[in-house]
Length: 514
Image 1 (cartoon, rainbow, N blue to C red):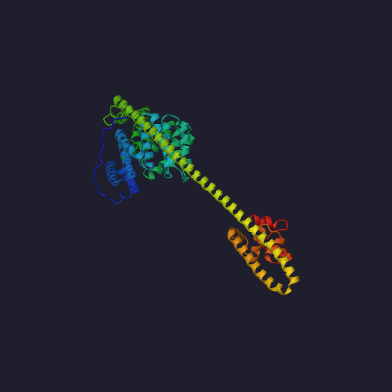
Image 2 (image 1 turned 30 degrees about the horizontal axis):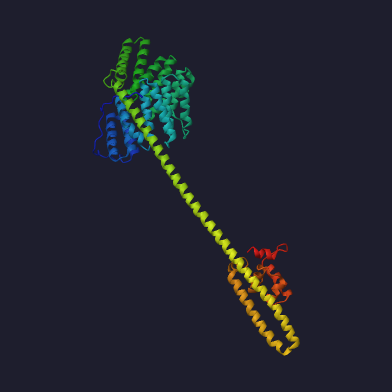
């Protein structure tokens, strides 16, 4: 980008709060008021924006401050002091880039693009104008900002005679217009383009009635509309009408102090037309005025703008070197940040892997220990159950022997049988109660799990289940429980029913799994 030397020629922002009017605390209304004042008194408008910029800067309202500075820039453009406008825009450019509200940055790019376009710096102009559109599209901009961002692109294309491209940008203005209302500024440029393309019928359709609309609203763009109408009438060889519209355009430019950049072209057209109708003195005066205005605004040696294109090669080289150095430093910082991030990430991964490894090892150790304890407990339980089974079998064998003896006594000494039989039954009942108590103690978890699944089991049902778990058959269970074999079968059937087992399911296998 071309860099210009920018001396501080505009009024500086003071460090004291200026007199506060009724609207300065409402930034949007305050900005609008400044542009309204500019139609009547540009110096007053300039002071208005300057006071606002001072106030908002002290209040740290960056967006409002930038908008006031943009207002100052606009006043300088209207005064034809384009280099002052450049200075203001470039001074606020860093703040606009850093500001969270990007709408003001879009407006800044738009103004820079338009200024570069005035001096034929087409590539720079298009860069800034396209940047403006890009920013508006990316951000939540007001509804009217996108159409008004396409318009300067269309104007720049008109200035470079790319009329078809300009028409596309004007179409984009309408396509991005959410309100779907008529855009009279856009229609004016449609008419202007069709005049350039010699489609005078379409040009007349677009321009018809626009003069009165802008006049009613007292808008400065009336100068451009009158100029466009003058171009159309000139193309149609309607000399008197052309002179009329050009004079009207000149009148608006002088009275409203707007579109001063158009003044040279209007004066040149009036000079040409007066020369054609043989009014050479007037033609000379118009041409002389056009030359003076052109030199004042655009000549590189003019007092206002000679600094604008005074490029300092050494300054540009130094700036390029500094930019290259900054880029290199930023790249180095970026690489260091990446390396530091990767190092931290690697350390974090190693710590994570180590933690996972430790947790995995501890978990495996716990599982292994649990399995060992379970196997150990199962083995102890199995041994104790075998001991219980052996004791039970011994008791059963003893019962056989005692029963045989009792039968012999019953036959040979009947008077002793009854008392001995009663003693045996009491002793036998105590033995089986002790056996059941020992089984319960050994197999407490079995009873607990069994009751959790089947809570309706009675103590007798639990005894039956315990004997089934120890793998006693029905006959042995009959002897242990002191009931008949039929009663054992009934007990087993009752247990099956309470356990909700089907005929296909084996009772012994089911209990063994608990």
